Image 1 (tube, one colour):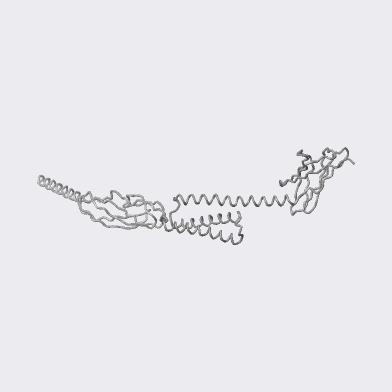
Image 2: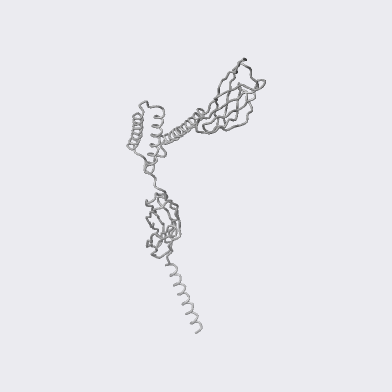
Length: 310
């Protein structure tokens, strides 16, 4: 009886092992092996395809859900059925409206998608001809307006016409760059450099001209009004300087025959005169070159002859 019971137990154990092995052998094993993005770089709004390679290494048919995510945000779920030892490719088409680098995953297997800002299309030959013609037309128009205002067409009018044309041309190029790819064209680069040079020259020369004009006004507003040779032993020269302009001037140096003389610095008010006494030995009947300079950089000169002996 005991032997019979033992045999029954052995048979039951063998049956259990066989069933267990049968169940294990029929299990499916589905995994995502690789994820790729094609193309890896796209412009904003353009499509990119995410491909996931899915493999079933088990011995049973399996229906699997592949979840596609971009930066942990689900974009699509795709169901796929795989037979034992079968491999399939699952795809998802995506597009992003913002430039940047994105992490793409399919069931936790990742890849990278780069989204670029849109590139303007290259400028066409016809548009290039139109732009050049427009710039030349503006130049001719400015010359015509300048000639109408001043038929002599002096350098100032020409300078304004050239500078105005280049500035307007530069503005046109900046506007076109919003819609066309023109930044890498040699002619455009040369034109932009030329604009910078001409505009700098125009405003620089204008500033120099204005400064020169102010200096000329200051020079014209002061003059040596009178020179008196006096003093005991003929050693003093009195110089009267008149300021007839609209600026105050300050006299800081006096030269007699290019020899600097020490004086007390003095400011001459508008529409007034001031006397300066200079110690310098002089001889009757001889001429003396008197030069006066101001703190503003103005220099005036006058030649005066000392009185002869009576």
